[in-house]
Each structure stands twice: as C-alpha cells, then as structure tokens.
Amino acid sequence: MRWRFWAVPLRADIKQMYLYVHMHPSHRDFQRIFWRDNPQQPLQCFRLRKVTFGTASAPYQAVKTLQRLAQDYQAELPKAAEILQRDFYVDDCLTGANSTEEAIRLQQDLVKLTGKANFILR
Image (cartoon, rainbow, N blue to C red; front, side, top):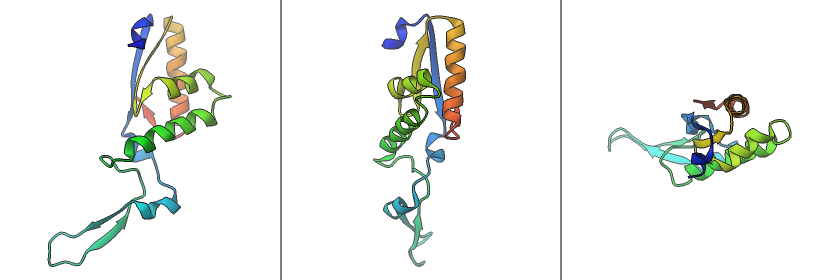
C-alpha cells in the first residue's frame, strides 16, 4: 500500500533471480538430487550449484542475498540500498519517488546496485 503515496510509482522485477544466486561450495552438499531416467538405471547424484526455484529455502536465500547486497553497498548507493531492504518482496519491487527526476535517479541506482550481483532489473 505504501507505493500509492508516491507521485511516481515504480515497479520492478529481477529477471530469473534464482539462476543468479550461487551456493557457496561448502553448502552444495545440502542441495543434492537423485535422478535416473528409468528404474533399470542406477541412481545418479547431482550437487546443485545455484538456488533451486520451488524449494522451501529458495525465497529465504534470495531475500538474504538482496539484504547482503544492500549492506555491502550501503555507503556507495544509500537510497538504492534502503529500497532494496524495504521495498522488495523476494524478487519484486514496489516503490516510488516524489518527482520524475528522482524516480529516474532511483531507477538508475537500483539497476547499478543489482547489477553488482549480476542481477538484471527490469
């Protein structure tokens, strides 16, 4: 509801966010899947390198990634870091600005900040 108070509302989405969040190598053992094409084949074990969409922990991991990104670049891009922590819900953003110029600056800063983690903000 907060976005209704802005003169210029902004909406954004991080494209395919889960594909860009890599797991630390020491945590990959906790994300394993077993697979075989048919019952006659032996099971194959795969360790996942990225956050997997659809798992219970995926939204948490995505949110924590954004929070850490905001903390790391708080001094460089303070307004964008604040928006990243306050106005994102997993990979969706609803925010705004009081003027068109401010909205353009905010949009550029958000693209710059999310780009530091190789996220594509659209």
